[in-house]
Image (cartoon, rainbow, N blue to C red; front, side, top):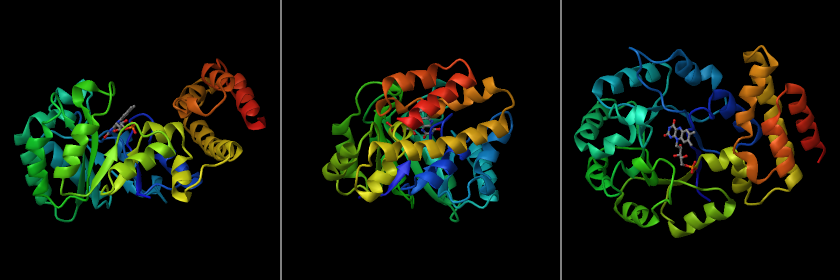
Length: 309
Ligand SMILES: Cc1cc2nc3c(=O)[nH]c(=O)nc-3n(C[C@H](O)[C@H](O)[C@H](O)COP(=O)(O)O)c2cc1C
């Protein structure tokens, strides 16, 4: 079994979700924050709230930043270090045009000179252990060949590799042949990330790449929140145990949404993403009712049906 990391997912894995998952399920060695960015002269209040230690009690947290140059990078690191963190993950994989057009995320992979600039900044912060989350490239799957030698000069905690290229976004297949080439060249501890959905997927990657230092799951964990505990215990849970654990998470998530939003319709809007990726293990009819409920009352009827199954 390898350490399992919970991938950052903007819009899904905010502090309340992470805390609830850690409390009711666990089995995760690190939870990453969605990327924190420099915007309009600072960091959004919402992003700072997301990393406040009091909002992350009991959660092994790694704040993630996205930056294209030294100024942004240093601003973000200062803000995070001020909150007491000694671990920071640098996003070099985001494919969103809003970020790549600013030279951030996967765009860095086509511009090794900017990676060098960021690498220099990292060496000036010996108190922080950095890791990097990246793709094979932005436009070409061999761009990593120019970037990896720069990363080899740094004392990184690890590199997480999602073997797609930026312009693919999340479409198409992961490129396992190129991942193997990266795996063979990489001298840092390496974490695999991409399209892991089941315990079999985790076991397959583990056996094909025994030197990996860890595995990272994003959508697969949102879709099967219990899978990290199953992986840690080495056994698949009974369906009813999965349902009960997810309902316990849901109770806390509902409470959080109720504290944050006033009207039932707002709560309903906020609560639905909790189920969005959980299609594969919930009965189709109930899933549809959960996602399509037009009123909070109908939604709670669907929850009741689910808990009585
Ligand atoms: C909705 C969404 C939001 C994401 N937000 C981030 C992010 O903030 N930082 C990051 O490094 N990756 C982000 N990713 C990428 C995931 O962390 C992960 O690398 C990707 O989904 C592939 O892994 P998976 O197949 O296990 O989901 C996001 C992906 C999705 C689908």
